[in-house]
Image (cartoon, rainbow, N blue to C red; front, side, top):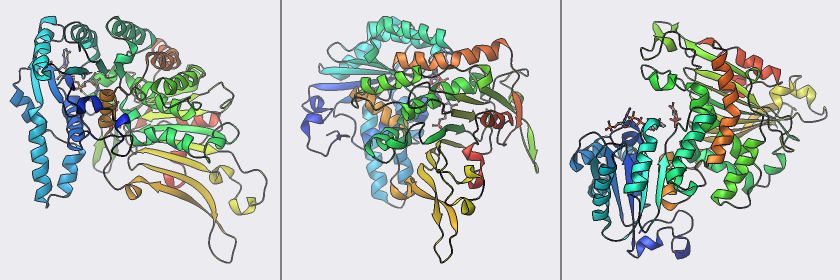
Length: 525
Ligand SMILES: NC(=O)C1=CN([C@@H]2O[C@H](COP(=O)(O)OP(=O)(O)OC[C@H]3O[C@@H](n4cnc5c(N)ncnc54)[C@H](OP(=O)(O)O)[C@@H]3O)[C@@H](O)[C@H]2O)C=CC1
Ligand SMILES: O=C1O[C@H](COP(=O)(O)O)[C@@H](O)[C@H](O)[C@H]1O
């Protein structure tokens, strides 16, 4: 029996698979682009983890679809051999325990019996008719929900959507399609993609995936805000001075830059992951946790934001750097990148939300490759404490002593609040310390991968963590003017050394808004 994620066991009404449990229903999941990296690294492992943990319904099949010729057994071997999911890791940690390994092998055999492959072209209706008949055979006359995961490059999305919706839709059940990013490169192309998808699918059949919305800390944002009394009263311009959304990677493109060079860091990280997090952070309380209520609030806050102009941004590109006997390449040393590429590998921008809650509060975003560290976090810097009671003890630099709440999305998920505290003893010495919730300590069990959570949501028809088309439009409307200016004016990015803290311009941008980057100060750098 599939586990219920929402309620203690035994609550029949809320069980999302109750139909399947009585044997009437089945779910067919087709991974389109099954021969690709994402399918191997993320999608099949996530499906296996869900199966292993009993979250998949009783009746399901998984089909791989791609042009590469492969037999069912070859697909199964690929899945078995490339397994990199948390279950595998758990077993490596417990490798002395033979029972666990036997259990996993048994579960893997059972899972693979449900996996099949069909080779076909992405634009061939005939090949999708063949897929449909194979699906029907496995579905054996049950009401079948069909989920197509488009793990393919965007130029073939429309072919697949057309063929799948015309020739292989669910007849009595629901047809849903997970669409991978990129969702266009600007407002115009995103609008075109949406109009194309809507020729064949209704909005509630489209699941635009941004895997950051499946990350534990991001899912927790609304819980933190709306289930604790202590945060919400502080969550506004009255107490918050600025908010920082930071995404740094410590590696460059290293020979795989061709795809990135067409997009750049603003499209790759800001338009999607960081703006999505910002919307969840800043939105008003939704009427309910229903997908439409949550997404309505996200759209509202995105629409209240000022579109970016060149003066709100700094762009950078990493250059080569030597440290001891090790040397690190420049972005343009990557053989897949043109030597004269102006693509930003770093950007810092300042957003403002023109609504009553956030008027005047800078929301600074920073994302970059080849930086000194890898991290994704939200930093909330609060206002200074009024009055001078402890000023002599705290020092004159009030920025150093204001409260800061940090939500670290990765690595090592954590939520901590910097506070000032008296050092125990007879004197009156103050110390800066933090109230710290380190996930690894509090919740030591390994965490589900974002793809697991989002796949399960899509199977269950839960759209809350997927991007609706009006959200997408609103996000592109904020970013497109800046992208156009950068491209039209051929803005040359400021160079920064590989492994550094990014271009100096990012500090100037922050200083213009009276902000200091929290990740570069004190013991956090
Ligand atoms: N890899 C990742 O970590 C991430 C990927 N994505 C997105 O997910 C999608 C899939 O990613 P990924 O698996 O890495 O992509 P791949 O480049 O590996 O492509 C997936 C499959 O699509 C087919 N394919 C590739 N190029 C073409 C083409 N030009 N024309 C027709 N078919 C083609 C190939 O299958 P075959 O030749 O067998 O038909 C390939 O195995 C992409 O849209 C990507 O932007 C998003 C986030 C992260
Ligand atoms: O969407 C993307 O995200 C990955 C990083 O994902 P993470 O979960 O490992 O943080 C990034 O490498 C890729 O460039 C980008 O397209």
